[in-house]
Length: 339
Image (tube, rainbow, N blue to C red; front, side, top):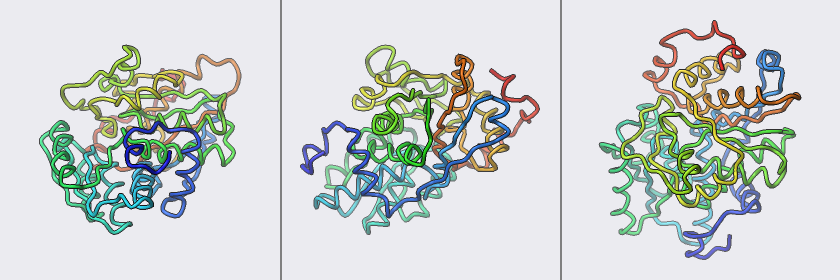
């Protein structure tokens, strides 16, 4: 991706851009660890490796894309004194943190349906936060700031965001995970796009699968129909990190290249939120916990032992969401008996 302003708006992303993003952001992010559960591996009869982006700065993978975007703009003298964004939470924190790190102001528009802990954390990063009635208003609100010269960081429809997000998977593969398949959650498609591109660098034979809630399945519908399907209202899944209205034309192009989607029910999401927290002893968002429902379905179609990489995208959970997850104890039902 050459450093021209027009290219910043329209460039496609290549596997080489994932490597460039990794070099650019290396000093600003955590190289997050890999985890396994011996118990889970024994239960399933396969090797599941978790990339713990819930231990990333700001508690989610989103910092990778935000940092890559702002650093790229600064390199080319195009970073404004104020950056703006709309987000359901984790992207908001990422942009706020990246802006503070680089010494610029941030104004973030967040729909009121977002997690309270994510809103509070965004403010704690020094951003001016405007809570809007819904996602549509949040998206529309950035237009005025853009017209005034602010830098807008889209949560997924941005080549530098996509390249940054892909570095999470790239790190895991560089750390030696010989993945037969990679699973990650899908909202707007930025993480999935970057993940697919990262596998092209080091593990092109690996299958790549997206997981999204059945009640927020706009990405899967878009891939099936070949055009963007946009929800009129925010889907109120417990997986608040994927409460997006639609993917973009850019991310749809990459989502059409992956190997498939798994639509996950709400009870499956809470089930795996409990089990992964129990097995890994980590704080794990329902958004990324749901990937395990897709993993177990896929594994049941496999005859040989497989190694699966799961991107744990975040760990920012409000008290309200935590209470919903643990409203009913589901640890009495072992994973093999669930799907």
